[in-house]
Length: 243
Image 1 (cartoon, rainbow, N blue to C red):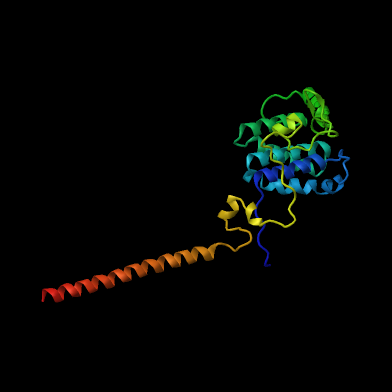
Image 2: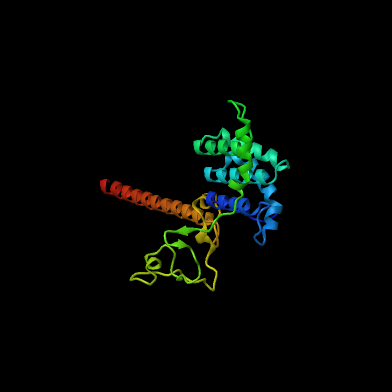
């Protein structure tokens, strides 16, 4: 009681969170701290499967990837019904890209659909390669100049012309350092949050609206009141003149 509702995550942020769970929540992960993600990966899939049809496309894609990864990593477990559910929902989604991904994942996991002929030998061959495709170790990024080595690189802003030339050019702006005093959280409010009335420090803004309405109404009444008085005065003056 008394707590404000947490503002909803943006689709890109939610998709990133689900990707992290799918990347570090599988049993093959050996990165320190994976155990905590592995413990909640199944619950994350269960919660996200309930709202799958209501999510944006980029979130649906990550939910599908998470379901397939956990389904491949934990065959025959309680994850299997959730994986099948997400595959079926994706198979009949409005977006053709998501439908194609679902069909690819269904065949990759060795599952069959109700329509069409089934090549059991081909499905079995794909199923044997599913772990290597979905859970394989990712190679480090490569460039035209070779491997990407962090050691020895400059600390210039990535993607800038200065970082490509390995020295500061005219007009280069470096990233600001971390502030010592926390800035106003209201600057991070999105348009969606502002429409729902979620604002940061400084109040809700309803008082200012009511004040502006009251001032506008008061000003209008005062204006018309003055005008009516002047009209009545001028009318009385003209009557006296005519007399």
